[in-house]
Image 1 (tube, rainbow, N blue to C red):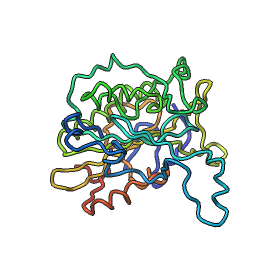
Image 2: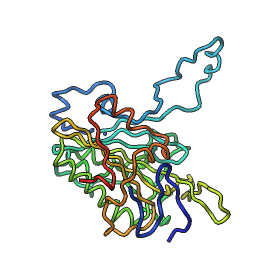
Image 3: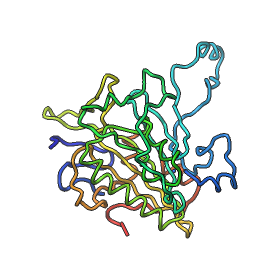
Image 4: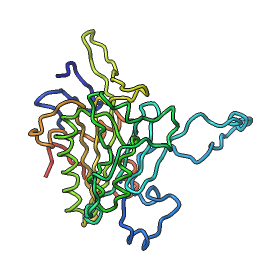
Length: 302
């Protein structure tokens, strides 16, 4: 049992029984009908968290600024657009900052076989900055999917893409196999009753007050590549309803054993708290698309 007080900006998370309060994969036929632009999935997403992305060094205004980029820039946002998701990679943690999927009735169907998939290194990531299977071996942590494999039965390739270790973070087995799995199942159930459900998932590294009364951000690392173990995980669900209304549900769970009998609504948190803690923005981007937005929290859950 973890001790101390974890702090989620805009909300308080107390570990224990009272925890918490409070984007696509199209089928092949649809892709042929609509066309795949050069941006692939990324070009079709209605919502992308605010993050800088560039194919090459950006132009830097001001006299002499071009000289500063003579030898390139040491890092830019690392976006990956795959069959089943879009991901923004964090080379420091050896995992993703966020992963976005699109779920609907069509993408949930299919006969893809999880047994035919194996976890694999992401060779699009520099070898200095990527996780390996060896990092997880004997660590005591599961290779926890961010974009869930079961969300993409519509295509074997789409499901296989979820097994890149860039789409994985170290997750406590009890959480991965129980409460977190319940949240993933709930996300799929919502996709059966709505036009689309965009799912954004990622890790959090939250500060905690320790015995000296000071706040610290502390997290374990595993393996020779020092893969960061998140203290918490978030999942933001953006529901497109047939009526045109957009509904927002945002969850945080600690990366620790969680009683699967605790209702999922207990893990609902205000979206602002996730935006503050993660450095991402959701609401401003959604409001560029619609003003018909309803945020669901524990108090107004239907």
